[in-house]
Length: 329
Image: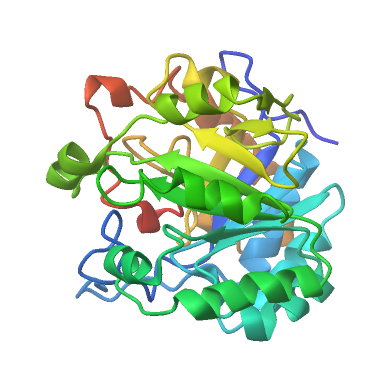
């Protein structure tokens, strides 16, 4: 194995979030309220299967054990199942995850599982079909629910559900969510709304801290679980009376970045050191041939020395990210 990827603050990186498209077919209020808007200029194409293999192989050679395939909506790629298989075949990669809006899962999730997908996150922002439509712009609640059932039928032992906390919309639905996971092996993750370049007014209206949920959980006998070194940033709570778990992702909390263990590569081949960073590091010119791996690793390691100690979100600095679909959330 090459040297472990490490930054100047001695944080090690076990987790790659790899975007394969920035296209999405939902119109979530907090991400793409007007739907996906392709740039008028001719965009470069998204990473090819070979480029995905090369970048994943380089990360695996430097200690990465988990890859999350993201978008936009990653299942919009026709070769999505092949991408899963390619990532899963890289030596050293033990977890292959994806984050999806779930609309294709009922038909395809078994194929994803067979190709090597080990972990699955589905975005579900409300258990009320009308509010689901209000938040996502799509009347597909029941199809997504069918997809979650299909995931369990396909052999997934746990499904993670991502719910963006929105004040005055879904923030009052904790009782319904808790009832839903009582007898289901679902890890429900409440994600605080994050401010991005295009979302200032929505952030002001709908941001709510996850602290009140955490206080409620602790007061009702929920216990904090320990984190593995390739886990994401969620604080995960379990309860002896529940099959499901609750995760909280609170990027505005002090020291949130202290345990950062993940890097991002965009669908156009740029390394992003932080979701809210100010620039990306170009990798694509080093993804054309297998023989370039040493140079690729050197460039990633060199770029890592520029990784800041924090995202500075609490200072109102949102970086250059226009919306979460642009580099895969």
